[in-house]
Image (cartoon, rainbow, N blue to C red; front, side, top):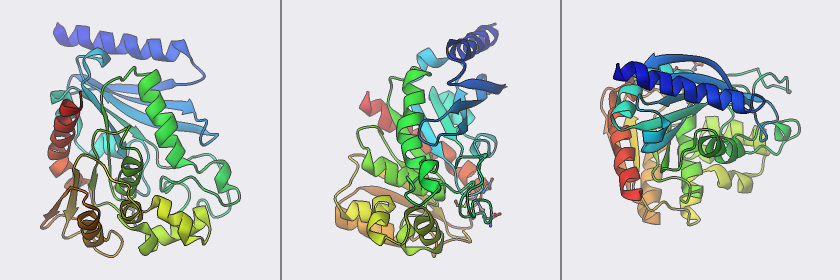
Length: 304
Ligand SMILES: N[C@@H](CCC(=O)N[C@@H](CSC=O)C(=O)NCC(=O)O)C(=O)O
């Protein structure tokens, strides 16, 4: 009975959101999950000038009882679906009355030069920067997309007026660290799985940053969490990172030790858990997702 009423309330809320402004946010599909609702949406983005997709999880008790929200940024090749279907977050989000929103990782539906040539640049690889190079600068503004559009969606359409945290994986971990460090006023806490911590010094990062920002290493510093820490950007809450020691991209692409040393230098509190036997996959993420959601729930509680 309680489940039926709660589900009905969530569906009414979702319909209310879509009918209120059809041009801005459209419900594509929804599924009941751990008593709550997983939903997939599209909307017209001001930052990317394209239609963008994202997914949400809203716990069973509905938006009114949500005590915090988590923005999850996914990695290379991902869409809005990977984390929602593979990270196993919903049961832990439900327990803590936390909402999660998972945006897509790049604009879609374009045909820019080299946009679809490789998995680590262009579509599925927006790298959470605002591009300045020709063509890309008109659409590949994933930094602004997260800070303005996604945070705006939470506030405006989902009526979230509780603390918001940010997390992500690999390229998305880089996004969570850089965006969180630049915006401590927006985010109660930051965590990451296997993040690319120093993209200006890794092959993935150098390819993306030169493609989106041109060969101007000074501008790259704005999107490099180690450089941001070195230039005084810190977060008042401790940062949580989990890193698998059997990760095929560790250490060369991820440079976790350099991030740890930079945190020490910058006096940024951080907890880095090196996990033996774990690789770069969502099996690793699903294993430790509970601890990350508990970490954000504690930070959000002390933020209220
Ligand atoms: N060569 C691989 C690389 C793609 C990959 O491993 N993507 C990871 C993120 S890596 C850093 O951002 C990922 O999350 N993949 C999706 C998943 O569901 O596992 C390839 O193209 O296969």
